[in-house]
Length: 457
Image (tube, rainbow, N blue to C red):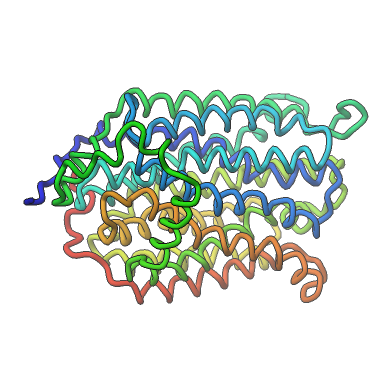
């Protein structure tokens, strides 16, 4: 059967289908900027924090391939991917409300597990959603649009505790039932984040439409009748054993482009995870000179980390508008190298800067790296994937994001203690080196041609 071409979508159609990422990243940013703070407030030491964070990558390793597999086989009145957006958003909003109210360290760790699993349930199908809905020429635009909303949502989420403190909301740790709890600034931020997440995802769910399995197979040149396997009961019929066998087979048979992108993702996300875990401890100890988690200086420093995370996400939103122009000039691979090397400079500069305000300049480089990591590897990958396996392969691709995070959780705390005297700023320096390696490795990836259509719509 002859392959047909996906119709080009308007700017506002692409906008609507990506808008839910604003809410997801609102929640993700609150998690990244505040969970280490919550753990330390509840008594965790620096060596424990990576182990407590292990829930985040482990849930991604388990959840994303399964959700991708199931969403490939789902078709309901809400479509193929959108049921997962909605279910994940409801669970994530619940976890966000509960997290800053945790009364013990292990309850907080369990809530991180639930929060990250829920965000993964919604986030993984969003990646496949772009591949489903957009033609090859428009996919880089779609992923850049997602990066833009990720930046905007994360700016708001990361900066909220600082903004509440500036507005006079209590920023000191209070005892909740005899146990130190998160300040009001953090609790109010998480409450607002839960509402923003639900509203943004609902916007995408109810303003976007999806192509049926038959239409998607027609776009790939396959007979529409084959789509029956992905009908309404397809996900329900999938057995656990069959799902795991299929995922394992697809992992072994992954396209060559994915194999070459795997180490790029590994070193990129090793750097990001080091930053998310240790920026709070590094900035509060180096730039603010505080180690007592109940002190005013520590909480000021922790709020400033929220501002820094908001800054790099704001820069990422700007970078998302620049990256398509870079790609037209330099190509996908070289543009990604430039951007992750800017991120490397940003993280390495933490070793030299003592004035916390100058760290905003460091975040400029990190912002370009973040926007690029969220878009260009997917643009490089997408054309090599079969349409009827878009979800499962996007989930498998997440393995190369999760493995370095697990490694960071296991190794970083020990490495800092043995090699760097427990100084968390050196974790950020190691992240900078990882970004440098990722940039070199991306040059091994063959990129699709032509790239001149990027950003035209």
